[in-house]
Image 1: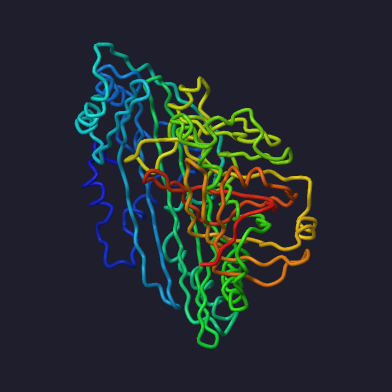
Image 2: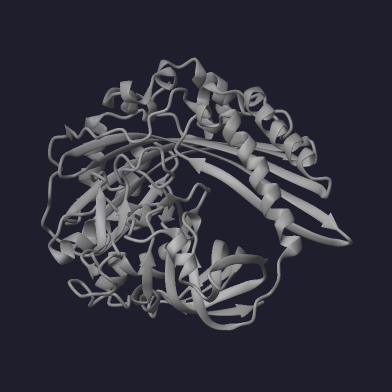
Length: 514
């Protein structure tokens, strides 16, 4: 790759020969011939990342010197090159396909707890220094910190894949979509429409800071989803199922492809028999797996340290205090192999880890980035995340879940006289300050006299996160991680996350119709 190439030329070369929307840019096939792209992620070194971005230590240190020229305490640079591909199939034919190439660097300067941030899509020494001078304006002091010599920081590999997505052509992906589509229509003659989506993404990250830490990461990501519509006696229902993670093409086995079709149809046609339950306070049993979104939204956000540092979160005075039963332990983990929210390093170059938020019912930690860790005089938890080089990092969740408890699912159901068994959720709203939430239950069932009975639909659950945490009365031993493509939004930024849960019983939540 030619050094000091600006983004306009970079994208122009990448898109040469693009005809219509059903072709993948030739940029991707060009990279297939590059030894960098062909190498396994664990074979790449710092020099490969320097070459990809057309920089070296000297150039980066000169940029940092400009960023610190007005008295900043600290500076870091975050280079990113992302390749994203999308293919859509609707009613047996591929009718959408596009690619996105993103390339640039973000420059951050800290002065105390104040942040100066800027980015540029043109990675040349001149453009980066101009951007650095803008970020430097957060400070105005004669004091001057010089960036120190770099030392490469190695990291574990939590999402090794066999084949980089740059080596997988569109012709290899389309049969997966067609197989799912054919299976969807074959499973039930009430299916009248289908939509299948396949997406993959690769991000190359190079990070360096003025304290001398330099590191890098190769981040793969993929997702396949199936949505279908069924009609019965003039009535229509719709549902979907997806699988996602930091995986390569090898993840999409015949078994997984079959499951996407089967589950999407099953979820859809079951809604024809669904009823609307009576509203009011009732026992709610959260199914193992993706119902962990309730834990993520109603509780997890309140444990992000920036909300607590600013005294916004209802958990801001709860460290060391009992918040739930002793059999409740909640963690946020960036080290789960191939899970969507996992990270080898966070977006501040820090090691990722398993962070215990609640241990045996007692709150033990928040999720920290660099700024909040300094405020609390702690080490960062590897939770500094950003959507892209255009965004400033902040404390974010990774994979948030509750560990197994002492009960069983059968015991929980048998001990519920009248309640709701909630399986999947969509369209939630949460007030971080007070912890109040509303969630739409997409699929679930009634529990009557200790047995799961009729499917339900079109209902909301309404409650308060800390209150729900205190009302957890049983936790089963059947933990399951969510499998779908969750993206968490905060302050205008979206990042990939996952969550999980064993079967959990909450003694009382308000259930209402919509």
